Structure formats: structure tokens, C-alpha cells
Image (cartoon, rainbow, N blue to C red; front, side):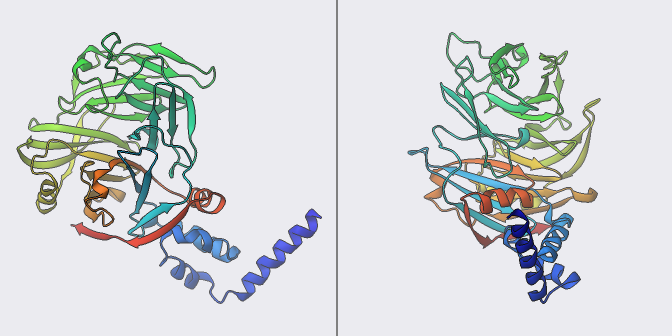
Length: 392
């Protein structure tokens, strides 16, 4: 029976091959005109179409990470809408259909491994796959926290700080061991971060087995080794302010590169936005470039008092935005040593949508991720062309 089924499938494939008038480079050229998300059904037409899809996806211009915008209703937290920007196809994608999880609390995100998470007094839930189709649930940490720094380091979820109960230690750190399920207390946050021991004040990311924390205002940097379960020696004494005029900074890892993004001047008179690459060995920094003046003025128009910014990054792509009003999202493409600045308009935003809470995640999205979500899963999508500007 299995042999007959296999022969039937092969015959269908061969028939499809015979009926397909396009082959070789011509087929690849046709496939390359389609948005990435439309390549999923195309890959099932025949073997030659699947090979053309795979060839198309190998093009570096297609491999740029997506930015996913999660919009959660403030009055009804269970209502969440999602849009994704695909820079390789320059389209906005709306996700519809049943949600892969039940939203019971405010959605939060961390640069760490594309992490999206929720925390309640009884449960900690998180997802790290590109389109957040799979969620993991554990008991909540021992100490209740309203705004902790969260990261997934290897197989270890880590929560740090964020406790506001008068009787609890605001610097407490807990780590979850999946091998022997349960939370355990670790060495607390360095005292240097006492006044900023919450996610609102810290920039967080992960590299190898270490969680890095950066005070967004002072620039103090610390890192936690999940193998040894201790903080780096002299944590809080290192300051990442390559330009003395930096008044606010955030960071993240783009591949193996630590990228620092800093606002210079002051919140009432922001002068410019700079990007640096930081060497994780000696923490020396090298300026990559500054946001073009015309683009920076556009960023300031979103919020005349530019006290903060947010970033999402992966691979060699950095997204910069104001998470309270992301009408314009700015990006920096560092592929092949180039430094290409651009912006994309969030055309789906209106005054009603802007009343929602916004959370952002960023990741490279592959064909297998799209198949899981839209072929094997129950999600649906619609596509809209994006309004993009590139600044040379």
C-alpha cells in the first residue's frame, strides 16, 4: 500500500513537471518576482519549482530578517494583531487565524534570541521561533516581578531584577533549569544596577552562554555567565559610551557583532544617532556611521523630545523605532560591509491602532518556518506593498 502511494506521488510530480512550461533560469526569474511568503505554495508545484524556490531564497537580498509588530489591546489583553515587514520583498504581511497561544498578560520582548514572553504570578510563557508558533510554559519564578530583564540563554530562561515588592530584593536573579525543572536563585544583579534593575531601564541580549545587560542611560555594562552562574568580575565598572555626548543607548548582537546604538546631545536637543561595533574581548569600539541628517529629523518628528529609542536586530540588519509611535521604522543594512540606511512606513497604523501596546521581535524567516505557520498550521495571511525610502 505504501509503495502504491509512493508511486502515485511520483507520477503526480512527473505530471506536474511535464505540465510546467517554465524551467531553469526563466523559472527562477519568475519565482524571484514573488514575495517570499508566496513561495510556500510555489514550492509544492513540482520538484523544479521547489528547486527554483530554494535557489531564490539563497539570494542575500531575500535573507534579510523580518520585523514582526505585535499589537495588543490595552483593555482586552487576549486581542493581539500581528504584522510582519519582509525587507527582501518590501511588503507588510498581516497574520490572521487562530492564535498559537492564549494571551493572558502583557506581551514583552527581548533582543535575546527573538524572545517573546508573558509573565503572571503563576506562569512564565515564552516563544523564540521566528513566527512564534511554538510556546513553552513553566511555573512562575519564586519572586514576583513586574518588569524583569528576561533572556533565554541556551536552554536556560533567566529573569533578573524587576521586583517592586518592598520585601523583595530588586536585584534578585533566578534561572530555570529544563534538565531538572525548577527555578533556582543565583548571584544577584551588581549593585551598580540598583537604580536601573528593570527591563524599562536595561538593554538585554545574549551571546554564547552569557547574558549582557546595559544601563540605557549610564552605559554601564554587566554580563552573567549561565554556566558558572556568576556575574563578571568588576561588573558595572565598564561604561560603553564611545562618544561622551551619548545620553541614551541600547545594544544587541547582529550575528557575532555587538552593535551599540546611541543618541547624542540631550533629550530636548538631540543632535544625532550613532552606530558602533564593539569588540567583546577588550570592549573597544569602532564607529560604523551616523544616521543621515534628513532621516534623523524624520525620527525626531515622531517625538520632538527624543528621550529614548528601541531597536530590534538580527544577522546584519538593525531596526530602529519609537515603540510608542512606530509610524516610521528605520533600518540599517550592514550586509557585506555596506552601510545602507532606510525607512519604511507603517501604513496599517491609524489613531485607533496606536492606542494598542506594541511589542517587536526580529528574526530571519525560512521556508520551513513559513510552512509550519501557513501550511501545516492554521494561520492565514494577506500582503500589502510597503512604502520604503533608502538613504545613501
